[in-house]
Amino acid sequence: MSRPVIGITSGGRSEEYIQSRHYREFYSTPAPYVDAVRRAGGAALLIPPGEAWEDVLPLLDGVVVTGGTDIDPAEYGGDRGNGHILPADIERDASELSLVRHLLEERERPLLCICRGLQVLNVAAGGTLHEHIPDIQDEDIHRDEAGLWAMQEVHVEADSLIAEVMGATRLRTSSGHHQAIKALGDGLRVVAAAADGIIEAVEMSGHPWLAAVQWHPEVTAAEDSSQQALFDALVAKAGEYGDCHRG
Image 1 (cartoon, rainbow, N blue to C red):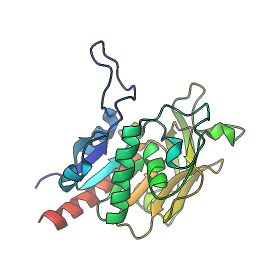
Image 2 (cartoon, helix red, strand yellow):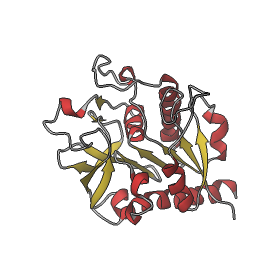
Image 3 (cartoon, helix red, strand yellow):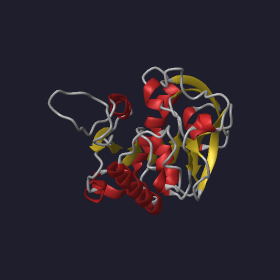
């Protein structure tokens, strides 16, 4: 029996994941995403920005949209002049937004969206973003002093897919985001929030399996079975999709 194939979107060529004396641009993905998919029994296939995802999609049983740099505010009518916006990768924005819009219209393949991925989902569904959380909150609990990972508690709605999958309604999550959902996209439902009210997860009714989280489950998945459970459930649903569509 073949493993379900999970497409994982990669960073854009301008995102600085790695350094080299020989090359200046890269398409790369942090290994923990791939590790979590493999632990769940899936096979990972990286989708770099600019790839004709229409040609790759028939190979995929599920999709993970990963974290990364900020979306160009022009995509949601935001403020490009905000000095805290990270440099956008236009190629990545175009690829991921078009892919996610297709998956929302298709409503077949299971989809897990993580951090930037949640924001891509929201913008693809017509929503908007807060460009910088400290602009709207007195205290930023979503990053540490260096702008890196912070462990924060998230409350999850008991009747949500995420609570069912993770087996809990209160979670300790690895957080590192400075942006958040402002206006919610069409058809999305808020299912988790942080102590300051920032939206931390959304789902979509009528979709066979869609979970979008603002935190980074891949960071702690190797040690935290509840975070790994998101990838386990995605791959399990992807296996059902593959069995149904590939025979």
